[in-house]
Length: 177
Image 1 (cartoon, rainbow, N blue to C red):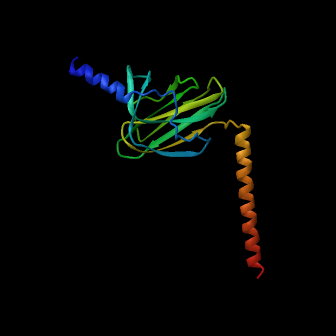
Image 2: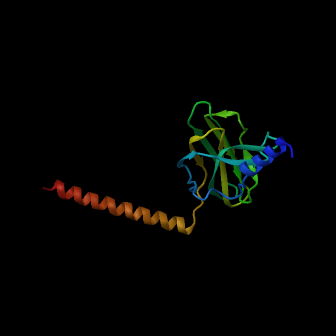
Image 3: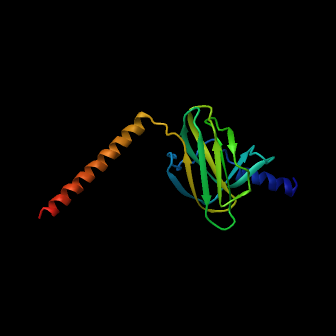
């Protein structure tokens, strides 16, 4: 086996894990909320990135997002660090790449807009950079609500209300002295 072939095989084994599964520790993205993170190791590649014949390698993460069929999503991403390149893609619930920014062209920040997704389900935003470091991401889309999310929201709001009422009661008690 030639050294070039061996090196190519090693690159595939080391840097080409499957990206059909989202990062286990990646939080699901909420509509209109900023998500911040750190890209700390090369994570692999995406096959079929527009404008790239083979694979697109880099420091990357996948962020799950729930979308409803027909929804529009607008994603803005930023990286810190001089000259860092950034690219983003959207994978549908089956793991197929449905939209992507140009690779290796955006420096510092990038924007991806998908006018309409075809199915309701868990999509993945792929965020990739050529260098290690911090990133932030914001996405605008209609929030898909389910019973659990609504119950969680109600519980959180009840706690906030109880805390605010206790604070007001304490404030009034101090004011009347």
